[in-house]
Length: 43
Image 1 (cartoon, rainbow, N blue to C red):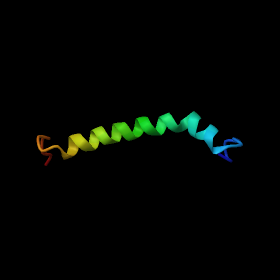
Image 2: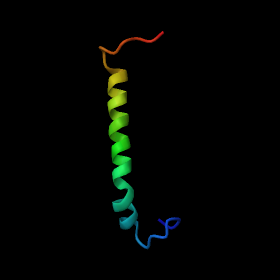
Image 3: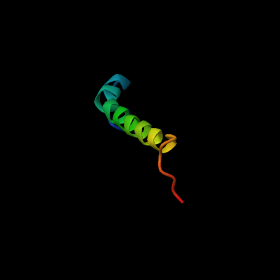
Image 4: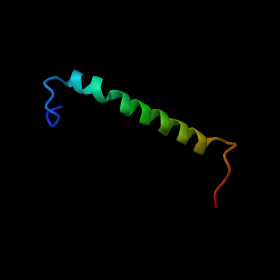
């Protein structure tokens, strides 16, 4: 917030929050695929 010059954390969260949400979704999908019992084994 301070580094970006925003006076309130809400502005920072509203501006950039969706980026983190999208990355979390992609990570969750990747982890789900990796941990799936039907996932191919690597070796």
